[in-house]
Length: 129
Image 1 (cartoon, rainbow, N blue to C red):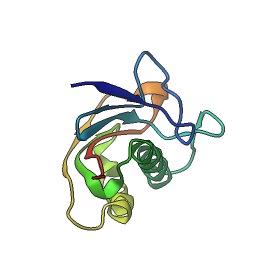
Image 2: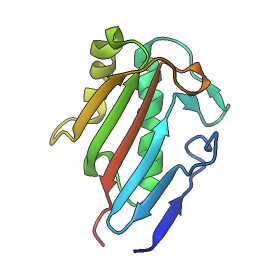
Image 3: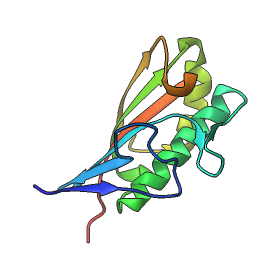
């Protein structure tokens, strides 16, 4: 199968040697997104809710560029610097995934790129047609 590199200016550019996403067959694999505002290139400040929202907006933009969407997401991985932020992250997460929830795991990690508090990656199915 051929792989297609997905790039959009509506999400931050990769900060290393990786692609925003790769589309293979009917699947799109979005790289982990830290809460970077694509218009400034800087991490968003504030609480974990603001940071979760930014990560999910970035993923949403990437999936849309691949002819997919959040409602076509089948798997999400959330990396948190502090598992005590789980409830607040979930509050925002439920605003983006409202039904037919994707499979998910959430992992506490020691450190994330740019010293972010959260990183989220997703795998989705591409829209038909």
